[in-house]
Amino acid sequence: MLFSRLADKLKRKYPETGSVILDDSLVKKLQFLGDEESFLPDTLYVVYGERAITKTVFPHNMITFFRNDQERATLTDHFTKTRGPTNMIYASWEHHEKIMNDIQDYMLRDQNRGESYSEFLRMVIEGKDLYYLLSEGAKRCGRWLVALDISGKIQGYSPVQNYLTEDWIKAIKNGYCPVDFMEHLRERLLTRTEITSTPFIYLCDQTKLTYLSSPVIVDGSPYGYVFLLSEKEDFDPVAYDILPVLSKVMGDYLRRSNQGVSSRNHIFHELVRDILHGESSGSVQSRIASGKLPIPPLMRVLVVQFYYAEREREALKKLSSQLALFFGPFAPLHLENRLILLQNMDPKLAQQNEKAMVFLRQLALSNRLYIGISNEFIKLESFAEYYEEAETALRLAARLHIESNLVYFRDFAFYSMLCKIPSSEKLRSFCHPALRVLQRYDAENHTELLETLRVYISTNCNQKLTSELMFAHRNTVSYRRQQIIDLTGIDFLDPDTLFQLEYSFKIYQFMDS
Image (cartoon, rainbow, N blue to C red; front, side):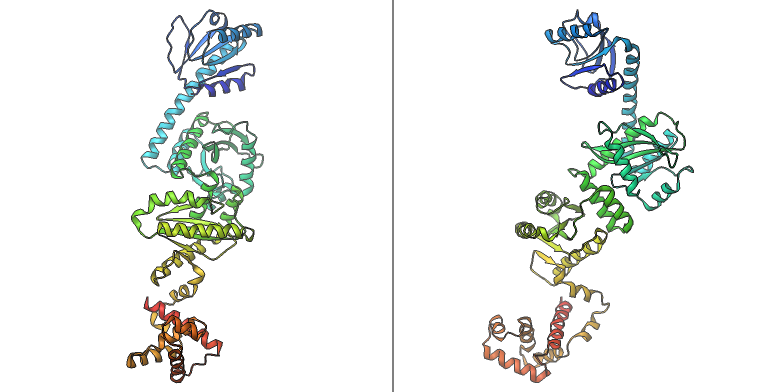
């Protein structure tokens, strides 16, 4: 175990104990200091006060026992003058027998824990999931085990025991723990002097269950908890060794699967994946509250993907950090061959969002990206629906050969509606009959009346602009316009007719794509 960890344990149990740590190191065994002048780096050497004063060469790690304050002061002075041990523990002679026993016990436990960790890690490498690991841990502890992330989502649990309360049975069925329970855990965690995976125990007054909890720590931040639940206050002490091992294994798994992702982003990414797989509204709301996720009051989904698949994975990783600077409040989520962004559309951020979209457009052009953008929405529970909007915008833009890097669902909503009509042949019955008349006339007479009508409608019946777009003289356009009226009876002053013609051309475009 680490020298600093051993020193902390002793200081908590024996307050008069002191330490000096200049170069923290691992200690694996205990040995009394003799007359040797070469020392093992992983050994903690024991020497009593009067003998320590006679030494001028010291090991890297040492513990010495003093009989009184005067002897302690003498030892401190001697070690200063002789360049004493790099790492030193000062302990009282009064408790030396207990301290020696404790040190041996700590080291043995640490060794056993290391062996258990290796064993459980081997199970992970062999492809065993968290349910299997918790079941194995439960066999050794003789009690029920469950793992939660910081938002309350149940990541795994051992086979259910008959002493579980209705609340826990309901939580297992729903897949998450309620907000008030997660707040209770957070309060208990915050009362601790240090954030470690060391188990803490308490008795629940309501359920009368004994809880032994080990926080899952990743890069110094809590990501979740591994719990032992017991109907008795006494249980196998091996649980104190097994729980930190399981929490470390879970932490290693989270670190590998979410490299460089903070606790908050991890919770959000997990939640989004679950929403896309049909997570219930109640679970989403509870996990947002438990994880204290800063969900924007108004938001939209952006889906980013490359033109060419062979560049995707590595390139998306590089783009992710760039996009994270402009789009918040969460880091981009990698999903298959794309990035998913949640953009905060709070009106107060209008200027910031405008700059972000300029940056995004430049990034899309320089990296050959396609980006689909959903409509705005207010509840994260609706994420799947609006993610599908962004995806639909990308699909329809490709189908209709729209040459734009940024495509908005609002511009394709009509085509999305057309996709829901089962037979494409039925679509023609929704079109204005003038289009078929003009299509037949053009085919028979080699004219361009249908295209002239399309451009004329798209320019809001602007004859001058139509002539410019078609590279035709205004008189030619005027003549064609009159031909169209004569052949179809169209009234260009009727807004309903113009609306029918506009969506009819969209249907033709969709059917020809």
